[in-house]
Amino acid sequence: MQTVITSKFQTTIPKNIREKLKLTINDALAWRVEGGEIILEPVRKGFLLRKNSIRTGTGDIEADIARAKQLRAARQEK
Image 1 (cartoon, rainbow, N blue to C red):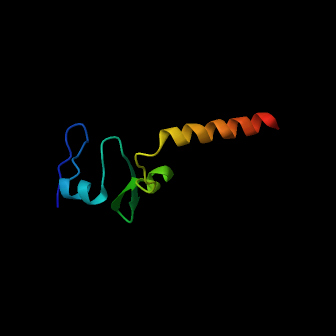
Image 2 (cartoon, rainbow, N blue to C red):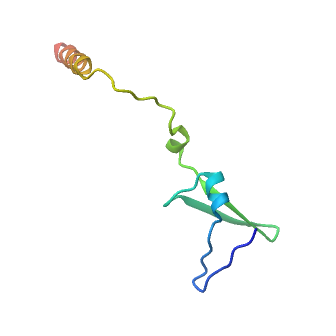
């Protein structure tokens, strides 16, 4: 697969590569040269490795508020 370098030294990452690596706008890429070849890798931030690992749901806001009040009261008693 080939891309062209523009007059501003920019190039396009082919769509199938972007999709396979799940690249999006503002993602960072690390460039390096090894043995005359260019190695290009996405830079993954630590917290992004946990993306979608926490399940969320509708929850019970009344119970959450009551629990928060209990915790606050327990801290103030100490």
